[in-house]
Amino acid sequence: MTASDAAPTTGPIYDAESLRDRDDVTFHEETDTVDAATVDQLEKMDDMAPVGVRNGDGETLVMQVTETCDWKIPSASVGPNEDFAATAREWIETNAGYAVELTAVEGVWHYEAHSADGDRTAERYFVVFAASLQNDQSSGDGDAEGTEWLTELPADVVAVPGTDLFFE
Image (cartoon, rainbow, N blue to C red):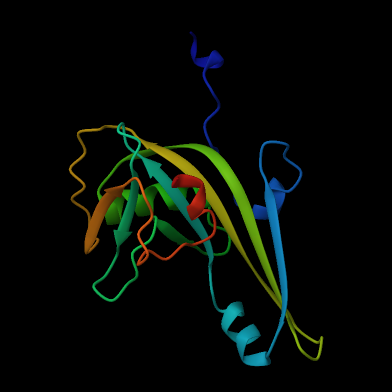
């Protein structure tokens, strides 16, 4: 097999909306009417890049970034004009201590909130990736409070969009 025959890797993604028309990416939409304070809060939040990282045993990585943070699959904040893919990879390497290869975009979750008076709208995107370890011998020695490899999703893990894709 030559390099050109290999499965394509996930390239730069600066605009989640650009994935809408791809046949290989499922686009999920959710719209809600909320109070003005919720629109204000949502406007201040970054987009997210959750990643289902699987090891050679078929287990999925969950982590707790800080002592007060919830356990969840790795989920990087992605600011305006940042590459979802690069941000996700770098975040996992820094916080979990694992080098990963993003293997697919598993889906995009688009959340849009409208103010009750209809004057304002805020939106947020979650671009969900699948990934594998680049090196099964990685130490997992990152900045996070804790990491675990699981096959089932425990009740105390927060299910960010796309989490269910990586657990049975």
